[in-house]
Every structure is written in C-alpha cells, then in structure tokens.
Image (cartoon, helix red, strand yellow):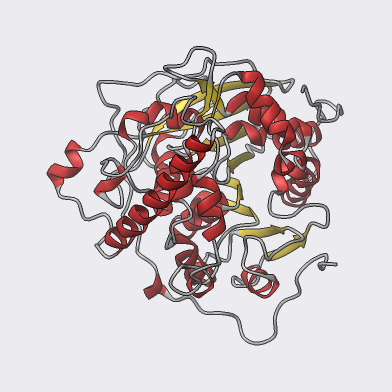
Length: 460
C-alpha cells in the first residue's frame, strides 16, 4: 500500500540548477487584433447556484518558442473521414502505416526544433505569425465577499476545461469563493477549434506557461463586472491579486513553471500528479522502449471520429479507462470534447486531434526544466502536493515522487490518495475538492456561508 504522505528525504535541501532551463521571455500586453474569432460553443448558464458563468478568449503570448508552432509541414489533415476511421482490415493497416511514418517524422522534427534556440524569431516573423487564443471559463460569485479568493485551474493533456466542473461544484458547495477561472490550452477543446487554421507542427509546454502569465498579468478581468468575450489588455497591477492554482499532470507543470517565473501572482499552488521529473528519467535516448513510448503509440492510433454521437457515447462508456472515471466527469467530457464532423453529416469528432495530444509526449524539455528549477520557487508561495497511489505510471516511480514533493522545502506538504492513480480529478473529484477546501479553510478561515449541500450529480 502506498504511504498516506511522503516523508522528507534525509540530507540537505536540493539546490536549483538554473543552467538546466531556458529562461522565459517576458510577456507584454497585446492589443486585440482587428479580426476577432467567435466562440464555437454558445455561452451557457452556470450549473452552480449563486454563480454566473461566462466564457472568454484571451490572446496567447508572442513570440512562440518555435516558428513551427504555427507552421505546417507534417501535421495531418483533421478530422479524418468516417471511412478512414473504420474497423476494416484495410483501414486498420493503413492507419498503422500512417502512425509509423508520422512517428518517425515527429522525432526528426522534435530533434531539429530543440537543437535550435527557442523564442528566436525575427521581428518580421513575429509580426507575420497568426494570433493564437486560449479560452477561459469564469465563474463569478453574484454576492461578492471581502476576501477576494480566486481559484485558477489548469487541465491535463487531452482534457477540456469543462472536465474540472465536478471538482469546482464540490468546492463551491463547501466554500463559496469569489471567482473561479478555468483555463483551456490553445490546442485543446474549444480553443483547438478556434485556432484550427493556425495550429502548426510543434507544441512547447513553456509557451503555455507564458500564455498563463500573459493572461494573469495583462488580460485577466480586473473588476467583478461582466467582462467582454475577447479580453483586452490592461496595465500591470502594482500589487497583483494572487490566485490559488490547481493544476493536474501536464497542467501542474505549466502552473509550477509560471509560478517560478512570476511568484507574485500566486498565493498557493496545488499540483496534482504533476509531470515534473528529472530529464534523466524519461526520453527515448535513455529509455528507447519505455518511458512515454506506449503513450505516443496509443495516442496516435486512437480513434477520433464516430458515425454518430450515440456511437461515440457507447465507445466511451465501454472503455475500461473511462469506466474508472466519476460519472459526472465522464458526462462533462462527453458534453464538451466532441463537435459535429465538418464533412460527414451526423458524425462527430474529438475537438482535440490525436496529433495535438501526442505532441505533449515527444520528450518535452519542460518536465526536466521545472524539476531543475523547483528548489528556487519563492518560499512565500505555499505548495500542497496531491499525488496518486500509482507513481510508476506517469510520475517516474515512488523515489522520484518522494523527491519531487520535497524539492522546494518550507511551506510544503503533501498527500497521497489511496483511491485514485494519476487521474485524480477524473476518478476522485469530490475527494480532491475536499483537499482544496482544506487549503481554503487553513488560509482564509471558515466560509461566510454555504450555498448548497447537494452532492455531485451525474446526468448520463
């Protein structure tokens, strides 16, 4: 049985390796362009009593780490046809051939990109690059309290922002914070549809960290008034309003890297199974047949198109992976991850292509960079690590997980969930919400009032 928490390892506190990470270029306010995209999904009312929900588009940071972030040479067309995704022997053989060829191209491209300097575009190249957008769901309390507590949530790879809502709902029933901001990376969910014409061949996690800093520093709504769909720039606050960050898996790494760069934006971090780990623990050169190799193959081979919504729904409900999810999270996923196929009436496709999902697994430098920098994280930022019962799957094993949660000493604690593995927000949303509430209680005292005590409901 895994421990209930990881005890501090013996020996002196780790020291950061500042030479092992690329410094992030500063962000700056971005004027809104003349052409503004629209939302692919209509605005909807909040499911949480006492809260208003609005969805916003916020500009991503410029420049990108590589020009290939918005340029295409090997990216396949998406979505494929229903026939290409069929289960006939010929279709399966063709997909296997395509996956093998694309994998080789991705490795070649990855090595070329990361052997070149990052964020090295010329002024003209930056000016010509298209503007990318992230999407933010904002839950605003209708009766504001004086504490001004804001939660900022970052999803894991392959998830939409809406899959956080069972956690959000459970938190708000116990502790009605003033504001919840739920982030969606530019190549996930609705953001992937908005940016579809401009998504390129590569993706760098550090760009997402800069996108988060861009939003929190220059585009986050400053008042409790209703904000516009496209968030305009504003001046940097003299005393930034801090957020409590909650980031899962890859989103946990993005959150940590953003806090390492701008700790003044965060009062507390709750990393949930973050993928920060030493560079020596992953990568095909050191682990040619292990590491994330299985993830890469299964993701590229994944089905992404179904002849109908009902067939897609049946597919997810039969999957052993999704059967482990809390029903409310699975409902949120089914409701937010699919869109009508553009050329096959009645068919549906995943909003995020398997190509965009797999880009996260091609030996990204950010897990190792964040690991190297972690001891330097400002000691005024509290960290509450939430880890799963199976560290071998994603986080590098128990020894690495134990070292991770103590790389930054002071104002640090951790808990190991016995009831869930890596996918804690999907499998144990109510338990995770209680952890968040415990942090809120410790930092801000009891809530002024409770909105509702109803349990999380699933509508499958």
